[in-house]
Structure formats: C-alpha cells, structure tokens
Length: 388
Image 1 (tube, one colour):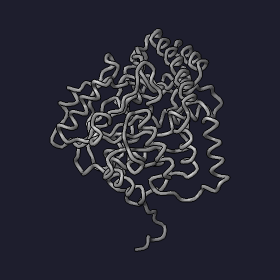
Image 2 (cartoon, one colour):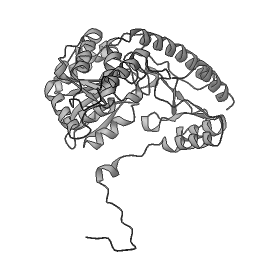
Image 3 (cartoon, one colour):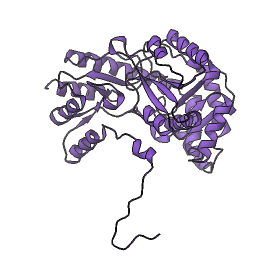
Image 4 (cartoon, one colour):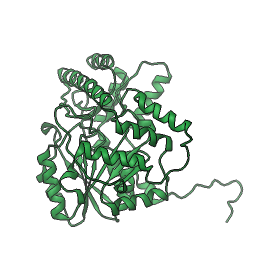
C-alpha cells in the first residue's frame, strides 16, 4: 500500500520500544551541554569513565594489529588469543576455572549483559536487582521480557546487600539475581559472607546469578571476591576492559560461565552485531595480560579523590557514605531540595556543576557524582557547592 501524496507517515513502533523508560538525566545533560556551548564554565561530575589515557602498551598493541592487517572479521565470540588471556586472568586473579570456550567477547560489557538477559529470560520471569542500581539493568530486563524487582539497600549500611531482604523477594517467578560489586552508583562492595549466602540461595532455589564485576580493580579497603567461586554452575561473570584499563571507547566486554549459556549468547550476538572490533580485541589482549602497574596507579589516584570528595561533601552538610570501590558517590541533597531532580537543576544552574540525579538509580533524594577527575576539579566543585 502506498502512502497518499501530502500525508505524513509515521512508523508504528513496537510495544517493547514504547515500554522503554526515558532517562531522567537527559534533560539535565542537554542543559549542561547547552550551557557549555554558550561559553559558561560548567564543571561536570557526571562522567562514568576513567580520566586517564589508555596505557601505552595497549595502544602499541592496537597499532601492531593494524600494521599486521588484523582488521577483518573474527570469530563471533572473539579471537582465541583474547579468550585465552581472559581465562588465564580469571584463574590468576579470581580463582575461577574456565576454558576459552566458556568465554565470550562482546561490544562492551553492556552487550554481554544484554545477550545474557535475552538468553535466560522468558516473558514474566522476575529478576532481583539490589538498589540503588545501574540504570540499564531494569531496562535491559524489561526489553528481554523480564520483570525487574528492586531489592532495597540502605545508605547507613554502605548500600551493602541484606541477604534476608533478598531472600524475602524470591517468588516462584524468580529466575535471576543481578549483582554489581563494586557497584555503580553506590561504590558498595559485597563481603565474602554475603556472596556465599547469595550463592547458597541460588543453589537452593535453582536461580542464575549474573554478576557485573566491571569495577573489580577499583577497590580500596577490601580484596575483590568473585561469587562464581561459590556457585560456578549458577553464575555468569561479566567484566570488560573499560574501567580497569581506561578503554571505554574501545568497546570490549566479556562474560564467562556455563558452556550452554555462553553458546546461547554467541548465537544471539551472531545474529546481531557479530564480533567486537578486531583491533580492540588485540588491544584488550595486551591490557588483560599485563597492566598491573597501571591498575595500581589508577586505584591510588581514585582513592585520594574519594577521600577528598567524601570529606568535602559531608562537611557541606550533604551526607555521603564512603564507598568501598568504583569512582562514584551518592550525596544526600535534601538540604538543597527534597526532590533530587530539582536539586540537580539548582546545582547546575546556580553552582554550574553537572551531576546525575538519583531518580533512575532508585536513589531518591540523592545525586551521583563521579570523582573520575582531578583533585583540582574536585576542590573547585566543593567550593561551588559551598555557595548553595
């Protein structure tokens, strides 16, 4: 059927797309960019990425790959050398035993999570997610037909998970548990006792755990523990190159877990994006194989910044728990305004500091600040906030 001349045709969007919730941060981000284009001095504390350059040996590996002509399609699941390096890393650093066949490489950690949810969820399946949570988890779950169920954590507990609260949320429809430790936006690190208890719940109830460990190398006062050590047959471990090696734009994520699940994820990726960037894969191989010096440097810098911003925000009457990992803080802004969206607007318009409202994180009354920036900028931000 042709469209009559003079009429305007609008495609009918799928119900899935229409159910996607718009981000409450879009308006704030757009306004901050508009102010910067107007020449106004806006300090951004919104970036969710390290401010360091990608390590030189990683860049060199990418250049070598280009010069060697390694720019063609690869296996959907990633080049064998990278998957071997990932399996070796998981054994060396996490005590996990995976073969390269149990590893899949995607276009960032987000694609690995997306593939996992589509491989595991049927319509109506419930997914338990500790909150505050990264904004994409519930939207991915909904898009895959699942039902996200928030499991509340408390700032007075450092946003650590209460296993009894998690257990009470389990129903006959529960299929998955999503963990993120260290967490975005809270910086919470779940202790080994908690992880063991969650693993036991998964075993008792026949649940799968999807654990996002993207920030594992940015932990300050604890050792990272992977929950797959306690229930490997129930666990998919997701990680990537973005945060640990300052490679956000290279778009390399990976997952390791039971072989049937990995094969299903490969099938999904094979019909969507196919392989991740070939050059990025060779760069990630170098990063994962040898970056300890860079990791230690970055963690030391982040810890100094954490201590500075937490002390400063609390001194300003903006209560902020001390995070154990990642590079975010959640500050209570009810002193500025009881609504976090309005508080975010005031902070932007009057202090000219861009922050992220806690709305989509399920952190009401709070805003997220990323301290993946210099100590000088943190001091400038605290000085501006002190005027409010």
